[in-house]
Image (cartoon, rainbow, N blue to C red; front, top):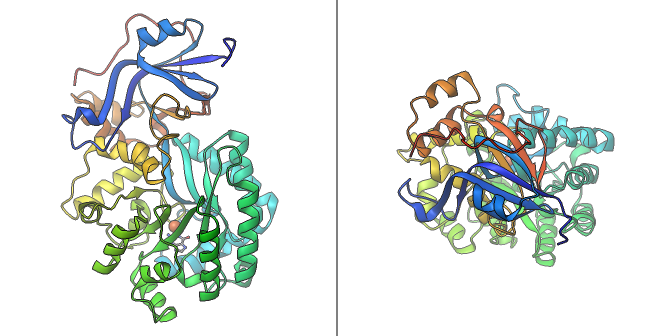
Length: 452
Ligand code: GUN
Ligand code: FE
């Protein structure tokens, strides 16, 4: 790297994870530096540590002073539907009627490239304003939506994963492909986008109900031909969905058995919801290392059920966590944790705030097999960083007056925080919100959190 390359130094309280912490005493699992810094060069993290040390290494770097705010890796949303930005907050239905009455009609609009492009702009603005720097998204059945999705990500230099939904039955005419066209279009989109900049492709049969066995065979061929791609679909979200799947695939041992039978289960497979599982299905998840994805706000909104995080983890199954917009009700991974915490409470399971913040950063990156690039503040990682203000609202500020530890502060952030608590989001080192950093030489004394 040339010495003339611009360097940026972010100053603030650094929090970075190396494993899922059990509690605050589990200090091997995380690094917390009260006056810390991240040195960024060419979109990557060049150094992190105590501010004085890093500043001495980079005397010419432009300092962005975010004290007393927290600096963390950008949030990762592992299951979201980009064509549902105008479906979020649709009243009164559970899964199948919600799809038929609200979601499918809306997704038909994404055949129009202009509409797709406009909505992609909104989608990315919403992600970054909520602190999310990587997402794994379903596009619509139309390649126009995939092009819009990845073109916008490329413009913003974001690490995004996504794919064309494959769906050839149980949906309106205008929203159905065919086994052959779904294969051809997916191939085309993989060739065009996978590995372009920071983009990665996910082969995306929507769910068993909307794919014929012939289409499942095509998905199987795609997965076999493209082991470099992710695979994403939905699993056991709702009882009526499970019953209908049994009717459509009478020979499968259970819902997961459909995907298993078509060779769709790999460590790169993301299974949205995975709520109502049989013991055999749990065995298959453990064997194949396919990853369940917990979508708390969606599961509550559609009345789908309670995800058994503790039970799955006890079997060594690694779970991701996600918003599932537009059945999910918030773009915020903080609000996702808030509702996730309550779902676990209903099952007498505890979500420690340190594990919660590990989950939406390093944990989700590890599920994606991308923790060498995103999800931590390790040297060499892409400089995707979120800046969190624990005093962002009146209620948070008041509650923070009684916060005596980092864990307490994080719990306040995840319970009361949303986009208002995200004071800045950096994507590959570039500020997306133009938030309140002081871009001058920093004052000598910073207000920091009371000692932990
Ligand atoms: N199952 C199949 N499609 C969808 C979808 O768009 N949202 C949710 N929540 N579940 C699904
Ligand atoms: Fe979904």
